[in-house]
Length: 366
Image (cartoon, rainbow, N blue to C red):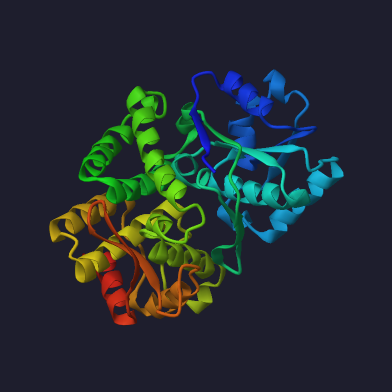
């Protein structure tokens, strides 16, 4: 299914059009506490939303659970939602992931529209049809493939974000540049320097819109070729095998500090992916001949923006154990997407424990 992604210039009009294309006898808007206060006021007086029910959940990726999904299912049921209702997910990646999962499973599936409010959600989470929740500290362990009817990008929402949230989304843009071409990689690096230093222009300039669209197009192109991740869609996992392990470990470490020597604090998804990119580009150099100078350029850029990861060598075995839980694995071992050059993708690569530890050493020490 091809998703319709609209970079809106007339927010209310484009939402009216999207809703007119969705059969719905009831309308519901899912937000978290942050987007309820910062983003819902932008749309709450739209005539097309005058009868909408607002559903608000706590903010934070730790809320992306079956328990939260159950709470939203119960609210929908109590408010009289039917299989002909429509859910609008207004929020970042947690909201679009969880809201998409809720919509895909409530009454065996209702229409939903994603309105991403973070850079991470715009360039990654809200598109591609992956929905889900975390389970037992493992990322996106339960979920389904289900595409939104429409994704509406209102880029002025980016002005509400802190720099850390922008960097979280920027990591996925770096990944898209690496998957696509030297040209897009170079433009993404250049744009990042400008974008992150001009806060008053975030999200409203034509440069921002153009590069966002091109970054999203990389993901769309891959998803359309392989909607259910049987083959080339695995390319989008670049940085994510190590990244998801780091992200999960950071939350587990924060919850059970007595069980770890790590100084790692809970990581935003994009930060974990950025660190994962460093490790997996190192493996790419080791195993696929990825150019050393490109590895050092990427690692230097990521260290400058994202700082040190905060793990020690004592954490390696626990991280590798988490990597073994990754959904992409098969009997051959821990599965990685690697590169032999920018834009030259190698899916279904494996690495042994010693190679992974060497990559983690490079992440920590350079």
